[in-house]
Amino acid sequence: MSEGVTAPRGTPVAYATTTPTARFPFI
Image 1 (tube, rainbow, N blue to C red):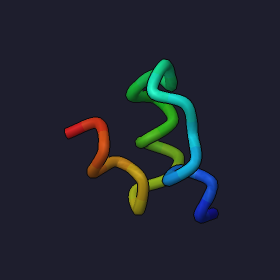
Image 2: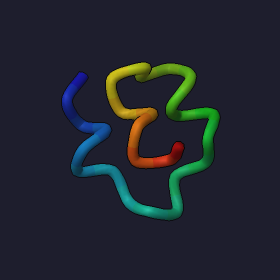
Image 3: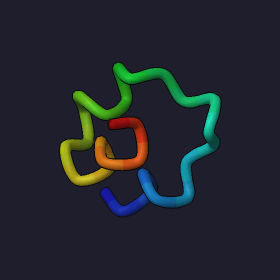
Image 4: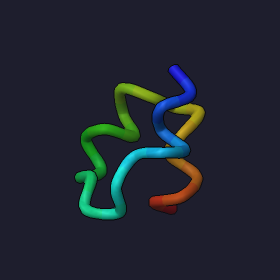
């Protein structure tokens, strides 16, 4: 799921858990 890159900044860290590829913008 590449939607993590286009995901809103208000997305909780829980989303990063679902998408390990998109957890970098949160951490």
